Length: 193
Image (cartoon, rainbow, N blue to C red; front, side, top):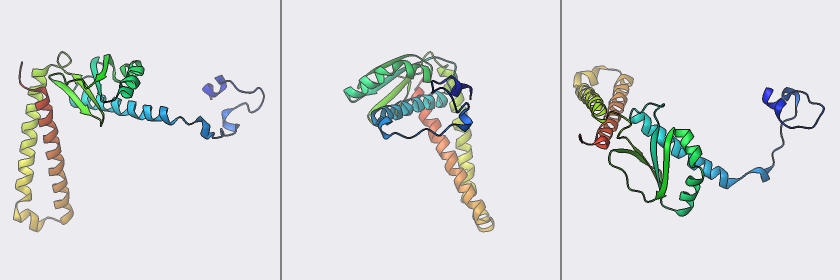
């Protein structure tokens, strides 16, 4: 209501947004190019936030970001929105270019014709993160092995209700997915330098 009152409008009734008419739709107001750009920006922001999350980077920590594009129009588009991207992903700087190579020890995600890279050196304690990930990897290896033993046990399979067996298969699959993510993160961090 407060925002509506601050908007420019014709004088007189209605005096409240609650009793005003719904705005009319005008197809001429649609901008497909802008909507396409916004969708691309959203994918890049989501990718960077995923890398931050998977790499255990604090949301408050400023990062460096590189956006590698295949096409000139994409370099131009992302360069034009560099300030918005910096704000949305808490980046200290955003480098946009053609076919940039992935920095060593950088988190990355490929989004079709665009790749995003977040260098991790100096942002996180690489040795501490490797140690944490290795501990998690060992934990999930044990969980997967335990689940495999359970799911190959004839006594369990013969006596457990079908939905319990299905639930355990689903849990094993989730453990395997987590293990794969941990191994990918460890590979990304590489060895001690």
